[in-house]
Image (tube, rainbow, N blue to C red; front, top):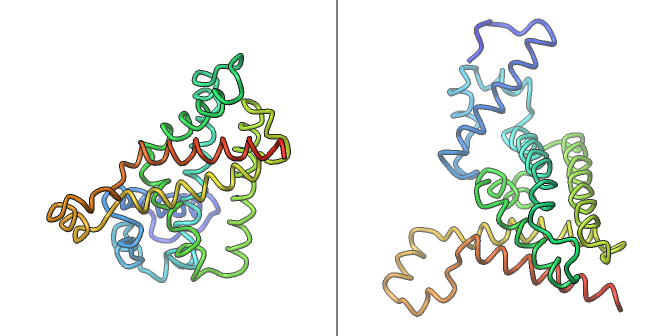
Amino acid sequence: MTTFQRARSEEQREVRRRAILDTAAAMLDEMPVSAVSLNELSRRVGLAKSNVLRYFESREAVLLELLDHAWKEWTADLPDLLTAGVDAEAAVEVRGEQFAAVVGESLVGRRMLCDLLSAQAGVLEHNVSPEVAARYKRAAVANVDALAALARVHLPELGERAPQLAASMIMVIGAVWIHARPSQAMLAAYEADPSLAVLKMDFAVALQEALATLTAGTLARTSL
């Protein structure tokens, strides 16, 4: 909560924006994206909802900006992880497996990022103005390009398909996250009938398998 009642300077407005984003991030440590409401966000940040809307036009606009920040933080940590985890002297097939493994492992502890990625297309890109949508999409394109650039460093064989791999990885991350977090009803169904649990996913294992398959397939297509 800020100590001033009205943000009069640009610096104070930025403090308010940061407080809103930090509060939303804290909420996402406690609850899924679907449970984050503008009313509760306003209450926790100590502002009227109308005041929050002066800084962000909707709940979705808050979460899109939070997604961009989380995405950039993740990408910034990847170079060192990839350098340590990918053997530059190994065959391309081995490097592909290692690249996918590092990317997958790097996301295991990033609950907020995965939750937001899983909601971006179906939820967060709705209820925003064209201006906010375009601003976010420009940021997303830059974030995908950053991941593609890292892919080219360790898998130069990808060539022009690196952006395609990077974009597909982002979609797969969100999809696996959703499927690896079944509802309480589904968990009860698995317990009642263990044969159904064949479809139950462990996020880390399923994500690594999916990313490795995606990487191998993209590398294979470069030779077509």
